[in-house]
Image (tube, rainbow, N blue to C red; front, side):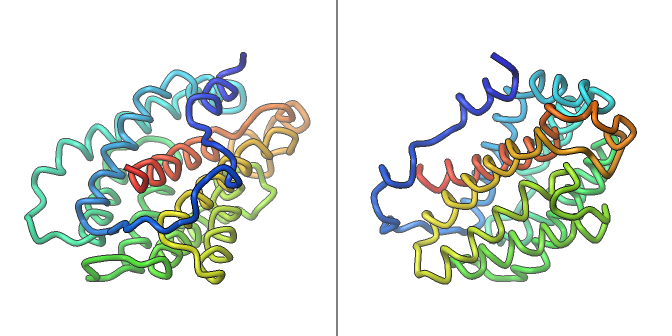
Length: 236
């Protein structure tokens, strides 16, 4: 079994048809945001080797190491947050820490994503489904602005854009916030898997041409892991 298949097995959820409707009462406040980041750090630590393997196939081989180091650094700073923190304040802390500690392209890209997400939610103390969609959209748009990538380029955008589109459609249809999280995570996972047959048009992988076909983009996979972590906290 390949590393990406192992990751899918470890993180996949039941089909939406097997889930109860999104009627759970979920509060996306600062405590939830901290929980999301803590869960993300756990998952990235567990998937460090698998992400490195994906990156070794088409990149520098250190994506898992960089993501793990960055989120461990974030964990060390979470206790500095004051009790009256907001989701935006947590996201901004994540952004500045990742920018200063994560090497390669991942630090600036994810740092920008979390920084734009923080700006999108502002000083709100609790996020509803519409605010969640705004958060995801701003994060994706920040990555596009920084990395100049488009869907189909075999980058993390191939996970972010399906997640944003699916979340927006679910929110417009009246889904509860926990269901929007699940739908976004599922779409990101499908998007990450869909990078495997693509030829890379951005980053180091673009130098490989057709040799990149058959390999999953590590940034798309780490995006999938982060959004699955958010959905897992939403169901806790």
